[in-house]
Image (cartoon, rainbow, N blue to C red; front, top):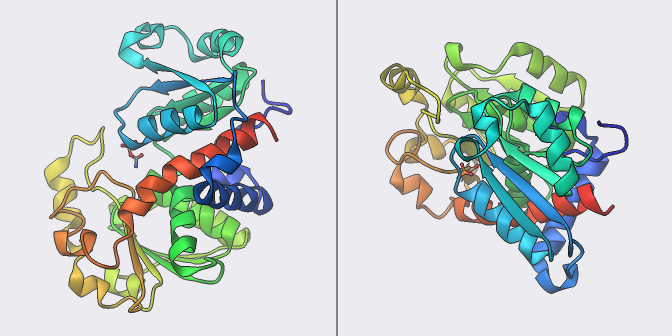
Length: 303
Ligand code: CP
C-alpha cells in the first residue's frame, strides 16, 4: 500500500526539496540532540536484516531510541522470511505491529514489495541497487566540511556498485558534478547516467581514476568485494588500478575530502595513509548515519 505513506526507498524517487529538508534537519539534529525531543515516543521500527551490518543496525537502533521510540530486529534466518513466508504477507503482518520498517536485502524487489503490501513507511537500508541512507549521510558530511555541494565535483574510483548508484541519484537531486572511474565490466548502467543528466546532474565516466579526481572536491571509493561476491581474485585484478592512494589524492584539490562508507578493506580499495590521513572524513560519515536517519525517520513518521 503506497498512497500517502512516506517511504524512503531511493533518492531518485524523492524530489530535491524533500531531500534538502531531510538533510538540513539531519544537520540540525546533530547540532542539538536535545532540541529534537522525543517525537517518536510510542512508535516502533522493525529492522529486517538479510545481510550483515554494523553501522546501519546500530545507527537505526540508537537513533530510534534517542527520538523516544523502540525497535524490533528480525534477522532473516531467525524469522519466517528466511523459511519462505512471502514478503507481501510479512509486510501485512508487520504493519499491524510496527510504525515503520527498514530492510537490508539483496533484492530491490523485496523492498518494493514491502512498500506495496504494507501500510507503514518502508526505508531502504541497502539493496543490490542502492544505499540512499548512506549517501544522504555522505552529502551531509561533505557539506559539514566544505559547504554546499551544489556545483562541486565528486570523483568515484572503483566498483560501480549500489553506493555509486545512489551517488548518481544524489548528483541529480543536489546538483553537483560526479565523475566515475570504474572498470568497463563494473560500470553503473549508462541509462542511470542518462537519467541523472536529464534530471539536473552532471554525471560522466572518466577514462581513468586520475582523470576522475583531477581538481575534485571529494574522492569516494568503496569495498571491492561485497557480501555476495564470489569472484574475489578477478575483482581485485580488475580494480587494483582504481585504488585510492596518496598519489591519486594528490590530483584532487588540496582541500578535497576522502570518503568511504565502510567497512574498508585497507590496502585494497584505499591505503592506510589515505583513510587515516588529514583529508579523510570517514568517521564523520559513519556518525552522520545516525543523524540523517533520525531526520529520515521523523520525515517518514511525523511530517
Ligand atoms: N556503510 C554501511 O552500510 O555499513 P554496515 O554494512 O556496517 O551497515
